[in-house]
Image (cartoon, rainbow, N blue to C red; front, side, top):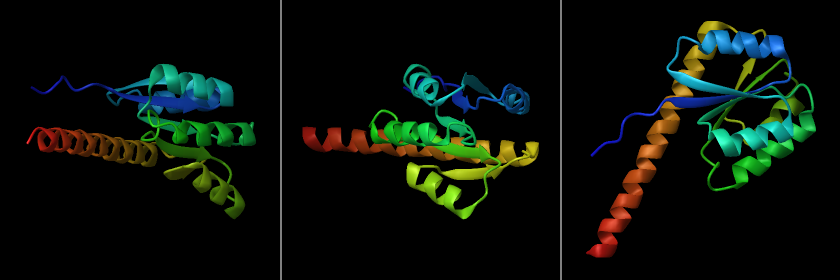
Length: 148
């Protein structure tokens, strides 16, 4: 039996209220649930409580704290599969390298283009769900082999 398809969950990690409102407005037409985190610690708390499939992360404020939080979140098995889309005004090579090292999957520069955001979010959520399905199939095969 297949379970009912759950809504994708997106965590918006940004301390700028105007940015959050814009991202929420852009995502309003998608079948997703959203939550907001305003700093690194809040992001970790919301990751644990909300269980997002995707994080839209802006690192311009409290950059080091958020990157450390991101690294911690990616290190835990329960959160390892979370897709991370960096939505930031930062565009220096060093910023991008640090974000990649911290586990970012993709980047989107500000100002955010709505069509580009929606397409990247859609693609990342599809990839996340395919990855989840592959993992379920892998576990099923292992169970069948262990019974055999």
